[in-house]
Every structure is written in structure tokens, then in C-alpha cells.
Length: 246
Image 1 (cartoon, rainbow, N blue to C red):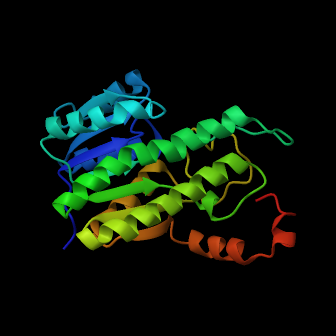
Image 2: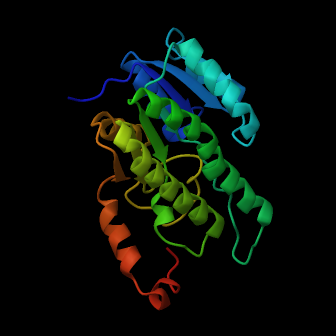
């Protein structure tokens, strides 16, 4: 039987896949807490379902705020059965550029923010022996690509963290899902060249929620055909892979 989510928290809900997931959850009747840095964009999303959505402006780099805010959200929702971490950044990195501030930003938002939000959710769900955790990683984390080392590193670490949560929490009945999208039509990919198999945030969100509702912890590529690309990428010898611009 598919899981039914009634009280959800979406971090990174002001745009892209996070916004699409939040909207689809509310469309299905769930109460949804929206978390993101841009208050005005959160309010824009909330206005689509004002009776079901609550907005909580928050910068995921401010990890010290998370414990109190998490408890406040759970209290105001009256519980929690799903948390989605969809916040992510990918600043452009030029050829020959090595910019620590950009790398640090990606690690803080893409990885440490996820750990700050998903740790308390995992503890709560483990104690309740129920609940679902969804993290939006990326196929970029499958191997170290030359174009953006910091982004690949942050997503590879996020995938490993989510796998560890899955191995730890699934014994308590907690559903942990890692989503690894390919190219999605968002502000992050706008202007990039060489994109293929491009999908909309709405398509990515629909597949993500379908996978989460199965209740069987999983790691999946979105769309699924990216598994073939990932397989090839993983097995290419290093001396060949380093010559590619992928």
C-alpha cells in the first residue's frame, strides 16, 4: 500500500524541484511547511494553497537555528510524516578558477544544511518507527567531474550521508529515499550548454513523490534512464574520464 503524506516539511521550497514537490503535496491535501531563504518567494508559493501551506523563512547556512525551528514546525503542523531536503546551489565555476568561497557555499548548502535538517527528522522518525526522508542529490555526485569539483563533492557526500541514514534508520521502519536527478529545467541549469534529457521540475517532483510513497527505502535516478549514464561513468577508466568534459 502506498504511503499517504499528510504533514510534510520541504526545505528549499521557494523554487525548482522543492517548489514543485511542495505544490504537489498540497494539491493532494497535505499540510506543508515551506522553508527557504527568500521570504518573498516563499509567500508566492504559499499563496497557491494558503489554507494548507505555512512559510518559514530560513537560510540553511544558519544551522544553529534548525533545532528550535524544526520543533516549532512539527508543533504547528501537529506532527510530521515527510521531510524533503531540496535546497541546493551550484555557482558557475570558470575554467581555471579555484574559488574556496564558492566551494564552501556548496558544501554548506548542499551537504551541511541537509545534515542539520535531516538529523533531527531521523531521530524523531526512528523513535516513532515511522516517517519518510527524501534528499535531492544529483548524478553529478557519481564521479568527480572537472567542471565543478565543489558541486560534485557536495552531492557525492550527500548521497553517502543519505545512504548511511537509510542503513541506520530503515531497521526502525523509516523510509529514506535518495533522488539523483539528471538535467532539470531550473535556474541552476539555465544557460548551460550540452544539456540532454532535460525534464521539468514538475516531472522530477512527480517521480520523486511516487518513489517516496512506495515506502521502500531506495536510491534512484530521475529519470530512470540516467542509470545507464551513471554505470558508464563509474566504469570508465580514469585516464579516459579525465579527458571528457562531462
